[in-house]
Image (cartoon, rainbow, N blue to C red; front, side):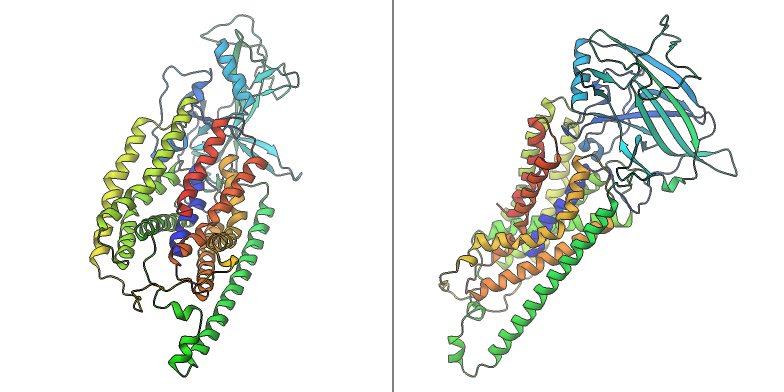
Length: 610
């Protein structure tokens, strides 16, 4: 029972990673390195516009940027589509190891609608994401601790707003491409991609579309932030877009090129917090185990010293409910469904953690983590059906097909319904995060074409096996349960049971939430796996302890309470997420808040089993 609750709660730790690009740690690169010769063409691709204030991604060409003659979408996997990634070609084309200065790409006249869109995105602090050779563009910034090392932000801002409420656009980009050259040949590999955005009101004598020239910059006049009059965003204004590109040799090897993106500003605090959390949880786990061993040893020793049956009948506690402890609970079929779903998620989480720990989920493989999670969840339907059928047969149930259908459809059905509502809200905002119909059809096909049949196969195998035999016979007449103390009431004991599992993960949860909602990388799967193991141990121990105390009070209705004890930590998770929302995030739209809390509601429903 604890394992099912662990599976449902622990999946949040990994499902939080659905939107994550990646994180810091060991990984195996997901793509093969590319060697470039001098003057080879380098095509910069553009990705979505993203904002931590709205969490609604938009297509790059939603704004009136310079467009190539033909816009082509790059091949996307399922995870990229679900993340809202829209990777397309752009007008930014370089020549390998060929510096360029003040390259004008186009001039655009902003309409009233275009100017309005730019101002809205500047207000919401949207960032432009670009990709070169599968590396995302990064903006170097000075670290907060004052050290010489630089930190990096993902993507550059669309523009900025001045104190006099005027809007200025980042229309000049100074790119720096770092490469590692093979000492034995002329080949080179790209190991870094940085940009410094600037706002420049370009000046020109006569505009020539075929050969545009500006007087604001040249090969001798470099543009730096604040060195020129900024370009204001206003209707019927011409905006000239330009860029510089410099190539710089680097000692960084291709296999280590992601290290720059995975650096964290607060790494010391992170390590200290994780170690501190591990020590506290291990200490508490040792105390729980010691109490359990001493208490059980004393009870069993006293029970073995009884000389007569009359003395045994005078005893109280867990020994008197042995004839009722395996009585099927109320709504036993629903419990089987929940346990099956928990096993499905537990298996998915465990396999995903192992893959991530071994480095198979590379940060360069965008959407790979989400794609793998969806596929693993589908294939783990086999274990969901098997476990729910085995438990259902233990309860001497006969309608295994109905239980199997519920196992295959209840959780995905509720999630899909909430998903449709959230997707409709995103669609109403014209965001690229809205899932297209084709992807929606693919998800339904995975559900009914693969997951449901596998659940039935697992149920058939599990139900055909001999039923698990109870170690003692169940009495025909249920034993009357004595009045319980206030601290042994179901609601109180369940809420108390969720504190320790939540305490085992809440520090790591902070970094995961920061990675999701504040657009940072996360790849510390080694520590995440340790926390996951501690979570399993903690959930099992707290469930056993509280179940033992419940049986000692002669209350044998332990099935549902054992399931909900560890699952109640979802309430603390939701409370912490609410606290995080109001203290760390600055979401400006109602839709963004609905998306935030909607994601936790659909996870939390099954943690608690309603």
